[in-house]
Image 1: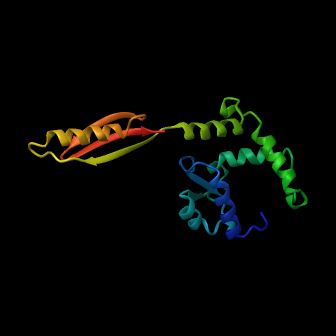
Image 2 (image 1 turned 30 degrees about the vertical axis):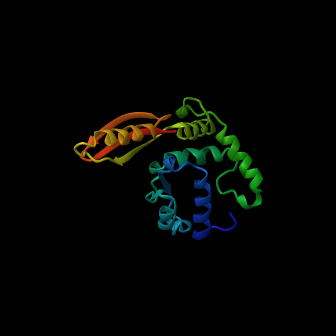
Length: 176
């Protein structure tokens, strides 16, 4: 990032989160730094809830503390990172993300992330269609035709429920 002010930080987080499917973006736990002063805008723009750890409470963000320990293998505590190129920092991040972790059953964070994204992209979206039909005496055929037409709109999709409620036919289908 070119600066550590709150607006630059918010924009950088938003760009980073754009690469992640919305259903995988849930929460962000952060230290109490001034760079997160615009956290409410970040939540509004991305839907991600931002939480802040209490001061001197590292147990509230154990993944972050573990990552800090791994980073210390490359940079001792207090190292000024401004003397390192972004390319070098990205290389170290990639090495850490390609390192198997016991907590991930010895998969790498990159492998787990790619699997989550792939699973999310192939997961069916369940939607409910509401199609109105009239139950008029003597008009059984047109009503049946409308119901059959509604069923045909879901051809090629897995239809798992047709339910008549009053003058509505609820069709719930998985859309791929």
